[in-house]
Length: 183
Image (cartoon, rainbow, N blue to C red; front, side, top):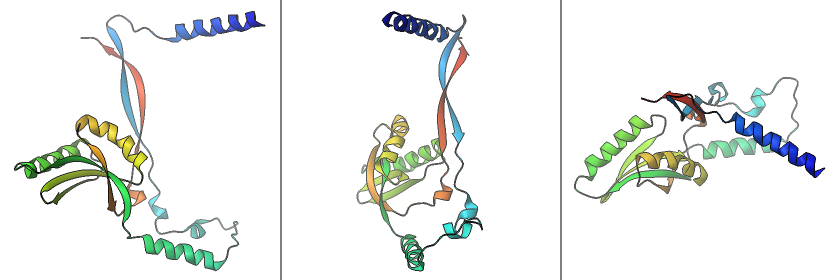
């Protein structure tokens, strides 16, 4: 039985080694990123409740008190400020800080058009923060690519109104291996 397992493992390893492709002469294999848009929330559902979009053959038996409580809570929290996270890409109080903060904000917006960016002044510091993240793990995920552009970037906790989920459109990132001609 051990002998069969060893032979089977050797065969699988041999096919695995054969599957690794060697590029033809004059070419090299490189990784390339592909950004695929993720569909955002259907805007036709904005302002609707689960009860208004259910099919006619579905019946929900629930107390009206529960339904009213959920609707009241939703209305009360609509404009409320919440704790969240942003990424600070600029923080300075030098004489040239105003112009440098404007330049950092412009550079970020050009390189990342889908991410919100904010510039603020809190005496004596000019600050530029980006993103509206609901939790720290979302901010940590976004910090990596931003740190490549702004090496001194770090995560800060702030209070703000969350943007509408319908406005948020994300991307799924995949890595492809492609052949590139060596020049």
